[in-house]
Image 1 (tube, rainbow, N blue to C red):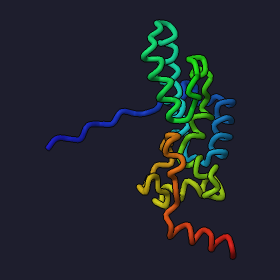
Image 2 (spheres, rainbow, N blue to C red; image 1 turned 45 degrees about the vertical axis):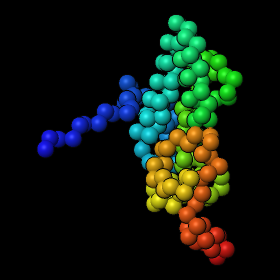
Image 3 (cartoon, rainbow, N blue to C red; image 1 turned 90 degrees about the horizontal axis):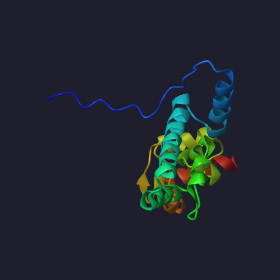
Length: 165
């Protein structure tokens, strides 16, 4: 049996590792979204970079079908409105991507008391989407699944009991 295929890195490290402004910005994002490591920010930046590159390429050669495809995909993730243009894709920020993560949505839905608590609920398998356990805090939640997010019923009772004490 051979070795399993090596996975490709899904992010790029910053070109200037000791850029004071970038470090401060990343620190702010990490505390606001309850991220564990900067790699998560870099992954979000990478996703954003890919979308923006696609939009820029499409602006150059104008392909209606591909434009519609990209806009539909971003609309499904909940990053832009259905009637958006390519310029709207270029205006997206890392903040938009991070706020579509499962961890952030759980916090916004008030299932958790803090970003770290939201992350813990996800990692420990207490969060269900469509009655299926999702254990990745970085999962980008499509808008159609947003209403199907729920907590494991056993855990819900424990959290509510903890609040009453």
